[in-house]
Length: 453
Image (cartoon, rainbow, N blue to C red; front, side):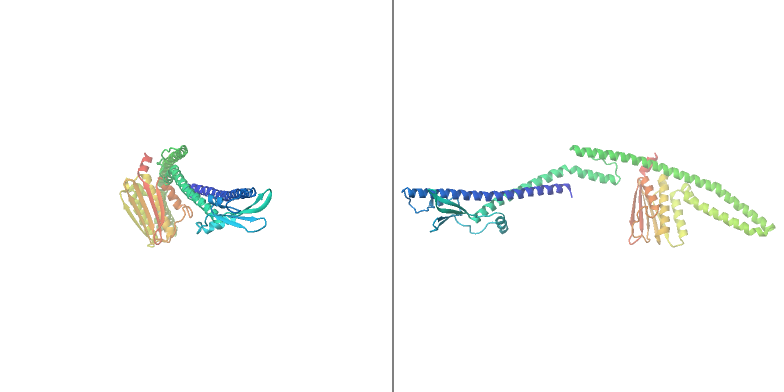
């Protein structure tokens, strides 16, 4: 959940709790006010009736018979209130109501049910009427429950309207304020995403708030250190690749010059022995032929090993000839089961030596994996060279239907990824349609040249 909506939900929850508490308080206050008003009416009216009795007792008399409620009725301060006077001897009861009843309710039925459940609207109050400390009757005041509920509903409705406007305004202001305050967070997250993709040159801008500025400074310092480490790693990786290739070149030269010459000499001596044995000792001819076959097998093995260590074409004829020779060799070894094709777009002679060697090693590993695991009928190698980058694509139509985890089944893909990372490149593994495997490698040329310099 986003922080803005999280804060808004908390604020709205607190506001609703406050609104609920306020509504309960308003309901309680209205009920208490209604009871107090009924008490006041009962007290005032009982005083009026007692005064009327005193006037009758003193012989002053009055225009209307007792009890006279006209004065209270004319005041009109208690609409919807009914008054009853019950004499002590339970004789004729006098009733009167002030105001009119509501024609139809203006509130929801659920509100009335809840209010009647929590409170007791229309509860009557009785007070004794005395004359010379003698109770002559009782006065019962009954307020209108409908009038009380109508008044409470009007108050609650006004409160709800005002609260809704207030909550909406507060939430809007909080959302705008929080969104503005959290805008640097989105910038930081986007910047971290760019750095995660390898764009370590990106730096976060300065922010006004101290906390965001501190975070930006720390992230920028981390990016600086990571960029320095990556640059140092790339330079070291290129040097290691160069040293590795130099070592392979030295081993290939030693194998060719020493072991190759020795095997050639063994073949020559064996041929001489065979010629002599044919004339002087025919029994040795078969043994000499056996020696020749063994030495020839050793020469073939050395030649294959030399191709793996350092193909002669790579130094003498360049990457193009070396890749053509590699693809042609795999076509011969596959015996027609897999057809290997090579397409080169651009000039391979413009590539620096570490990059050319890396491309050859990647193609060599890819073709080996295709021959071992793919059971493909076709394998295509495409090398596109531009001014700033090299794009290599190796695609087959084998049995692969999902991308294998790098390093899960061997070190082939792991070695390719390490070589690509060392040269600050990008490796993409995808599945061809309907099946097959695609390896895409993109390597920058300029960074390799600058690293060499």
